[in-house]
Structures are given as structure tokens and as C-alpha cells.
Length: 129
Image (cartoon, rainbow, N blue to C red; front, side, top):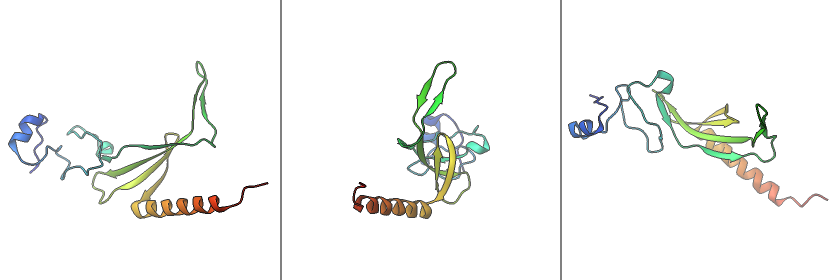
């Protein structure tokens, strides 16, 4: 049974379980930073971790010239995500606020290894003349 009372004091007093919206059958994972409510739309029902942002200094900056120029550096953002009813989390990579890849945890681990290997190889190369 899920308690759906939105008053946390009443909810907490009524049960030793954390208060959950009616659609959520178990507590959030520890990395989830979302506040969940009964009113959440289907596409908003899920868990999302904090953003990890990397500014891409070798990429073209984003420039909005309307009405005055605003320059924002390009970035890559990684979120841990688990949608409603998904069995496990995955990684969502966003480039300049647009999704560019979804990786399973195994794919994310492998990608991290590939990047680390590429960096190690590049650092061993003699400087160009």
C-alpha cells in the first residue's frame, strides 16, 4: 500500500515508509534529486541525478544575438536517469541542452575506460614540432 497524502508530517506519522506518490512503488535511489508528486505527468515520472557539466573549450560558443549578443560556451552534461518502470538507471549525455546519447551503465563504464586510455596515449606522444 502506498500512502499518497501530500502532507509529509501526516504521511510520516501514518507509516514507517517514506511518502511516495501513488505511481511510485519504491523509494528513490540515493542519487535522485527529483521531487515526485501524485500530479507528475507520465513523462516526468522518473529519477534524475545531479548534472555533471563539462565546458567544451575547443567547440564553437553558442551566440544569441537577440536583442543583444549573449555568448555561452558549448557544454556536455551527463545525468543519471531512470524512467518510470525502467529496471535500472542509464546515463543521458546532453550537448548544448540537446540529448546526444543514452548509455547503459556498462556502456558508460566502457566509454570512461576508452577516454582514459585515449588520454594516456595522447600524454605519451612527443610534442609536435
